[in-house]
Length: 142
Image 1 (tube, rainbow, N blue to C red):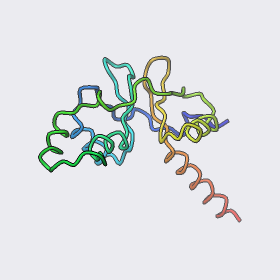
Image 2: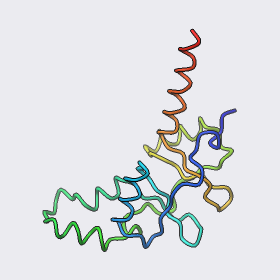
Image 3: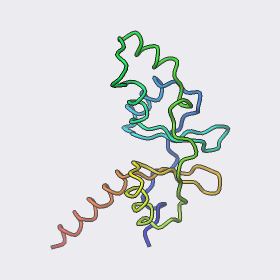
Image 4: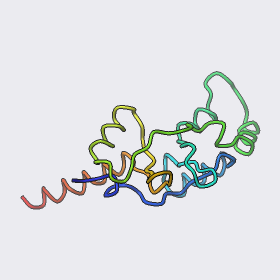
């Protein structure tokens, strides 16, 4: 049976609650990520997504100028906009269960924990990569 362990990104990049948004954006851009687990003293305490950052930076209600954007990027930390205590899966969770959870909750990713230790992250992209690789194999065999 296909499990989360078979598809997940092992040992993902992480940030702390005190990480400034500017740093998070840099990590996301460099790594091509849309979600990053948040660890404090080695323990998973949250997840921050590109959507969380957009909500902070692009309020449709408040007009602000570029200097205020710079101030937000430098002074707002992950802790103020992350999702605390995220839903998680274990490495031995059947992959289809994780896919159901991503679909049901409309999440882009789920942190993968073994006990209390973060060991990976599984995202919709991981499922799409797996699907496209296997469909390609099936079509090539025809």
